[in-house]
Each structure stands twice: as C-alpha cells, then as structure tokens.
Length: 206
Image 1 (cartoon, rainbow, N blue to C red):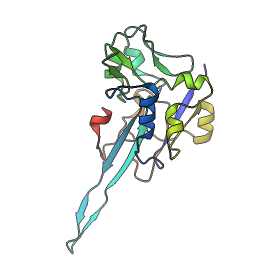
Image 2 (spheres, rainbow, N blue to C red; image 1 turned 120 degrees about the vertical axis):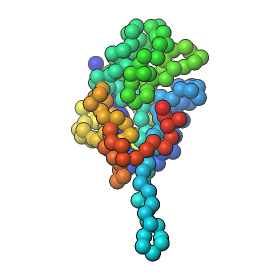
Image 3 (cartoon, rainbow, N blue to C red; image 1 turned 90 degrees about the vertical axis):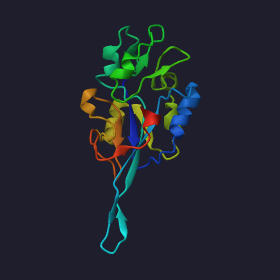
Image 4 (cartoon, rainbow, N blue to C red; image 1 turned 180 degrees about the vertical axis):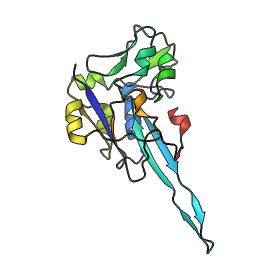
C-alpha cells in the first residue's frame, strides 16, 4: 500500500474557495456536503492611543482542509459496519455497500470531515480523488488552486520536500488522530489547539 499526503501552505492561501468549488463540481456534491472546507480564523482588536486615535492588531488567516486521512482515524474506529476503512491507496474511504448512515463517524471525527448525504442516505467524504490518483493525476483540488497553496504526493516524497510541517488553529490538537496532512503557517498563524482567535465562518465548516 502506497501512502499519500496532502500539503497546505497558509502563506499562499487567500480563502478564495476555488479548491472547494472544484471538488464539489467534480464529485457532483449537494449544497449540504463538502469534502474540502475553508476555515477563516481571525483575532486581535483595537486599542485607543493617548491622542484619541486607534491602533489595530487585527489578523486573519485561512486553512483549506479536506480529510486528513489520519494514521489513527477516529471515524474508522467507531464505524459499526466497517464501511469507513483505509483503502488500498491509503485513503480513508466509505464503502457504500456497507454504510447505513448512522453518523457515528461524523460525531467521532474532530475535524468535521464526514458528511451525511440526505439524498443518498449515507455518509460521504474525501477519498483523495482515488480514481484520479490511480490514473497518475492529482486530486482535483490540487490542480484547481490558483496560488499553488496545495500539493500532493507520496508520503516519503512530501516529507522530504516539506518536512513535518506545523498544525494550525482552529484545528484541534493533532494527537487525537495523528493526521497526515502537512501544513505550513503564515505570519499570523497560531498553533493547532490554541484559542487565541475565533472561527469566523462556523456555519460553512461545522
């Protein structure tokens, strides 16, 4: 089994959501289902100076995230039918012959990745565009990013290229599931698990 890794560079991401829209279009997803989500994380404020003027230290950064295809996936652990599994390419995928739509995986995932498809009556999630990868192509989100904030490849090659990377807020502590995504922060990024800012678009990503 060949393991693949996604890479995200926050210093390049402008939150344009082209990757998210490309994914939804390619997989023909309903408005209720998203395989890739864009987190807008912001903080800071304004302070009044002695002369009555104000100085701000407001900051914002974006995180484009799909399934992290974790080394210790919580979704797989709780699935009662074995539908949520690691496939031959190393991606965490849904076996739709087994999924009963119980939503246990959705509740267990700390990254809100699995989504319930009302029309299908089952769970759906990013499978790494496994069909494209099998044909030697990148996942659709990688090729869609206009600022090259995303990359993808075999785990050993990606580690050699980018190192271990960072883990960024507002995502929770990575020790829960050991996600495989490699991230690079920007000047205002905060460490994953911190609460220095606030999620500005919870309805889009939760």
